[in-house]
Image 1 (tube, rainbow, N blue to C red):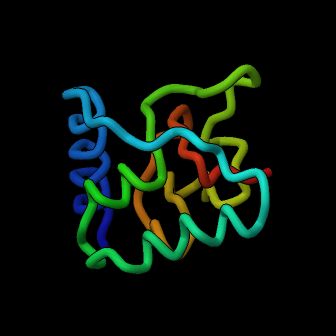
Image 2 (image 1 turned 90 degrees about the vertical axis):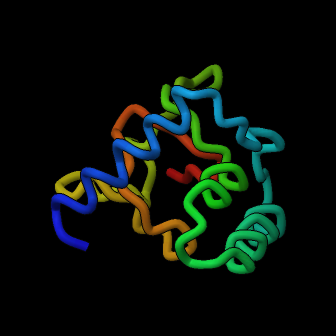
Image 3 (image 1 turned 45 degrees about the horizontal axis):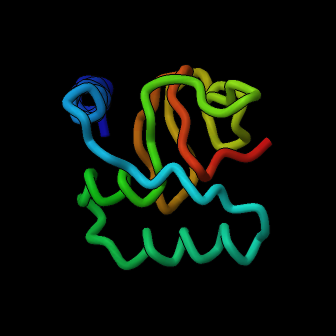
Length: 104
């Protein structure tokens, strides 16, 4: 994916959230088993099912929870690419977004 395509996808995701896309922010996976179950749901999606990925992973366009977690502090966030490197997601993300697959 080139830089222009990545930015277009980022804008599309931002618009979906701004338009009220309801995502599954809860329950947050507390165990590896719960985390793996969400990954399994994502693997069943078509690779280009952007909305499905966003819904299942619980994307929101702002920091989340009492600790105000955000993509910027997630272990899967690639700072210089503004990218989520979790293979089941592999999408551009804004540093201030969050999803329930967040890991430190």
